[in-house]
Amino acid sequence: MNANKALWEEGDFTRIAESMRESGQDLVGKLDITEGLQVLDLGCGDGTTALPAAQLGAEVLGVDIASNLVAAGNARAEALGLTKCRFREGDASDLRELGDERFDLVVSIFGAMFAPKPFDVAKEMVRVTKPGGRIVMGNWIPNDPTLVAQILKISSSYSPPPPEGFVSPMAWGVEDQVIERFTQAGVPEERISFERDTYTFNYPGTPSELVAAFRSYYGPTMNAFEAAAVNGREAELQAELEVLFNEQNTSDGATSIPATFLRVTVKR
Ligand SMILES: C[S@@+](CC[C@H](N)C(=O)[O-])C[C@H]1O[C@@H](n2cnc3c(N)ncnc32)[C@H](O)[C@@H]1O
Image (tube, rainbow, N blue to C red; front, side):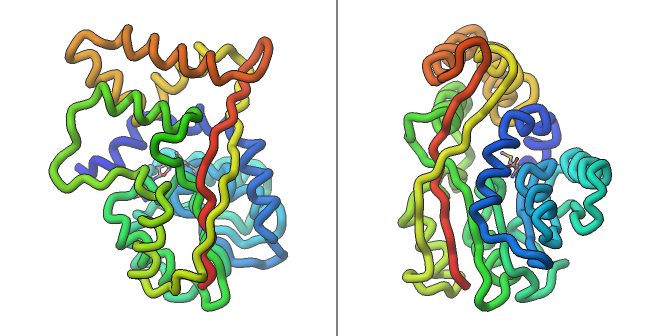
């Protein structure tokens, strides 16, 4: 069993993604999408960034390891009549079914960062990008004080130590590590740039209800609750997450929580 695939298929990330649609659309609006641009969205989920890119005229392929999210993405594209946006199953660390230099833009927003073998991921992203094309990644930043980095930090403190050789997905939020990965894939360092950007989680319910959604549907949080249950610490984990979500909420009556991420741009 592929643990990475199981992690994302056991939950239902569509239920979290619904709170990320506006930021996805805003981000895509900054990517200079033009009619007919060939776009690959890696770790695309159910299309939070793939669908707005297609609505701007791009021809989009979404690739994700989770079959349930691929099906959800295809259903959303069909419902919107987006015939040039399709989703298929695949692993960001091995894109052998995709030809070299095929895409003008490879996007991966909190997607490829979760794939094991980060050096292979960087190599594959570079390989499938056309010379003159771009790679744009959105990566959560380790120890950042905002929402997602804190969820992942709290969750890991309730989980058993990772296996020997495990590389944290959060390393994709460290500039030096990103440079090392892309330079090893053949990209000169001066073609790699970084910006801090913000994604806002907008949810119609209370912060505690959003915690409940993470607990029920977000693979990494589901695993943390499973691990906490082994030691009878579920209530402690729930309380810690509720404090975090409530402290970071900026809305009265609903939930709006901004989270900082590292936007990486690589010019091929
Ligand atoms: C946090 S979600 C983000 C989804 C989407 N990019 C979005 O912004 O809504 C992480 C996504 O990465 C996918 N993923 C994890 N590991 C992957 C891998 N090795 N290859 C491709 N996709 C992967 C998961 O299935 C999940 O859809």
